[in-house]
Every structure is written in structure tokens, then in C-alpha cells.
Image 1 (cartoon, rainbow, N blue to C red):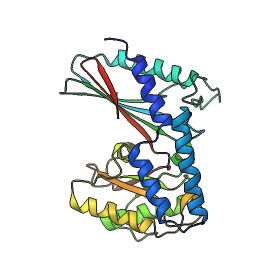
Image 2 (image 1 turned 30 degrees about the horizontal axis):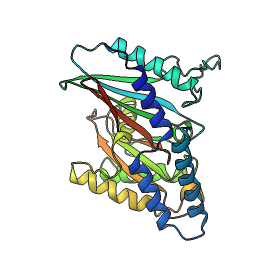
Image 3 (image 1 turned 135 degrees about the vertical axis):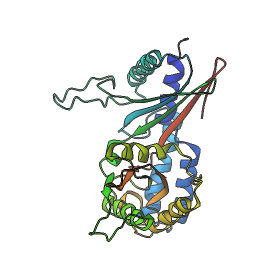
Length: 289
């Protein structure tokens, strides 16, 4: 396998410093909907200025460059050991170049490795597929928004939430309300219905790879996604919790099989800095989307 480290470094640079076009467009639409001269509009102005400066200077969009989460889809015959080694090398190089801040801290000793390499850090998911090219999806998941994710086990008598889509709706709105401005709103909310506790959270985070403008193929879930966007934005939390019309930019939902005894709803919270990029490597050529 050839050396893909430079391509992986560029993937990290783009993810950390160049906000995706769909996210920036959503922020600009949100800015236009806020009251002129309001704290919400001023906050979004500052965010959009930051987005532009980060792109121009190749500097991180946020001081918290997050946990790098890699989903790697590879053709038959490729070595996952080699891919993992090269991606880890790229993470260390990107950290040395200040595209990433050193974030990997040992939970027992408090020691920072200084290069973002630690036990299960960064995080990898490998999947062999039938295509003849490599696809690597990268998400940078910040710690502040990670702190306000929530998981519910339905039924929940506190919210009068049963094991149905109405119960899911109530759980998600509760999660957004409880977060207030602590997760750096406006947010993207990823939701998983079902699974066990672990797989449910993983599925909820996988929703952040979806484009903001897409819709779930199941019309019932697509309708709930849209309803939750509208209702979450009626909560008045607003950008950074200063009040306003934009509390979330998007809500993405998917479901998993579950055991009869369990009905989990996991709501993962992504801050406005929805940092994600995709590398496609085909026939010796790399493109980043």
C-alpha cells in the first residue's frame, strides 16, 4: 500500500479549519432570520467571521479541536493495520502543525501525550465494502458539546414519554432544552432510536456525517426531523444561549433494532462548528469533500 499520510494530513487540516459549505450556509440563513442588532445576530456575525478567518489562515475553527473520529471504508485486500498506522501518523503530524490541539489525556494519570495519540484515541471504525476505492470520513467531536449529550430509557414518566415517536420527540426536546447554551448552539442534533446503550450513542453520532439538507428515507422519521427543528427553535435558547430564533440548525434521526426490554433514545449534540470532511482515494487520486 502506498503512503497516504499526506492525504490524511490534508483531510485533517480541511476538517479542522474549513467548515463545510452546507454548515456555513445554514449559519448564514440563521443570521438573516435573527433580529437586527440582537445578541443572537451579533453572535452569528462573530461565528461567521471566525469561519472565514480560520479558512484563510488554516487555523482551527475552535480551540477545542475535539476527538478525531474516523470511519474507514476500504476495498477487499487492503490492510486495516497499515491504514490505522498511517492515519495515526497523520494525526501526530497534524498536531505538530497545529491543525489539531493536543487533546489526548490519560484518564488515570492526567498525562497529555502531546500528539493526540492514546488508547482508542483517535477513534476508528473500519468496514470492508465492495467498492474499489477508499473512503475515509472524519468528524472532529468537541468536548463541550459532548458534555450535553443525553440518553433516555423509555417510557419516562417525568416527560410522559412512551415508546413511540411522540416519546422520542419529547426526549429530544428535553435534551435540547437541558443543554441551553452550554453546547455552543446553534447545534446539530443526532438521534438514535433503539439499540443498546453503546450502539445507540454510536448511531446518534453517525448522523453528523449526513448533509444538513438531506432527509431520512422513511417519511415518518423525515417528518419528525423537520418538526423537531421547528419546535427546538421555538425554545428561544438561541446562539450560545443568548436567546433568539436559532437553537438548532438541523436534527438527524435513525433507528436500530432493540431488545423488547429496552427502548433507548440517544441525543448527541454537535456544536455550530460541525467539522466533518470525507476523503475519496481512487486510482491513485485523492479528493476531499
